[in-house]
Length: 221
Image (tube, rainbow, N blue to C red; front, side):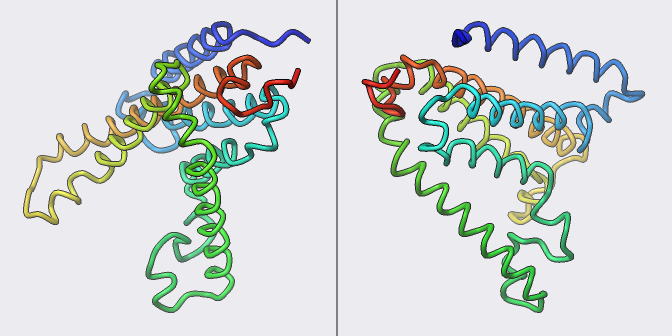
């Protein structure tokens, strides 16, 4: 089977994403709902992450298992977007109080496993992928710039998350409308982050690019 080109995947993902967003926005009775949790923008984010994971396993060749930390990182993002860290327990798995105050032992064990796996995944990315990413960024490779853009969008999104609460800790009070706008910006930036990640995965899935990025032996077919 012929490997789909990066441009074909990028165009397809972009068109499907835009079509979904337009239809989703048109169907909600109030455009404000389009930015709420479980609605248009967040659902697009979930779909992008699912597509990214599937695309990696379908297209990444020998690297699909060797570099398992890449789809694992997307799976962790997906779980966080779906609030898996607090959906199934009375105590949030990632909250410090879960481990410093009274909480079921089973919750602490599951939380410890989740945190350990997240740290393991992050360390593998830092050790195996960060040096290669930096080298490719210096060569102005497309995949490296896509990853950088995703990182910037992700950091900006987390900065806007709960902006009113964060600023209140410093004695700064912002208007409700401004805080609501920041919340919308967070959702849009998160979706953009995942969109860029999907494009980076599609680019790295191209055999020649994968080999050049050090994700697969040069002699591999």
